[in-house]
Length: 164
Ligand code: DLZ
Image (cartoon, rainbow, N blue to C red; front, side, top):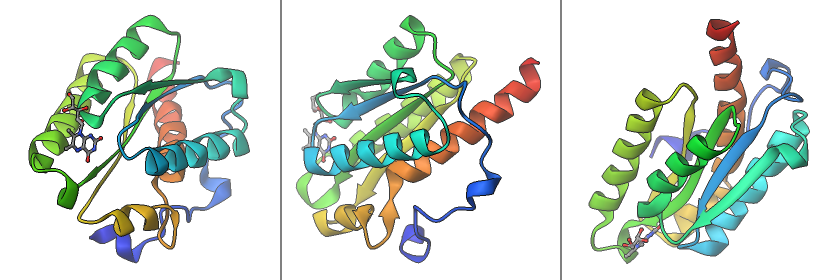
């Protein structure tokens, strides 16, 4: 896995645009809750570190990763947001239909990005074991929530270059 060689929380602080005027939605799957709540904590802390006001972070929860696409769609269509971050965790060993859930979320997010005029950010952990997920949810490989937050800020800034 590529992320084993790159810490998900490592980045150059100064390369990230100011985010104090940004509003961001986060949809979180409840399945593998201790992992997804750690991703959420990482994402919120990173957004706030770059200036996003806590009242401009809109968090909603859905039961599992399969529901993330619909949750993100509703959030985007019913709130005034600049981006939506999608957080979930699918573990191959625990999930007989791992490939179906992963490809559903991946295709769903791709479609949302094409349908809407805002970025939808992929923050789904897809691992072989719980340990690999823990390593990427604040463990030895960092936190994918941090990575998703930075990506959201950079993609909002990218979008602004075309809108203004
Ligand atoms: C059913 C299921 C299974 C077996 N595994 C996971 C998982 O590892 N991660 C996850 O986020 N969700 C899982 N789910 C739940 C499905 O995503 C979905 O919530 C249910 O199939 C109901 O649509």
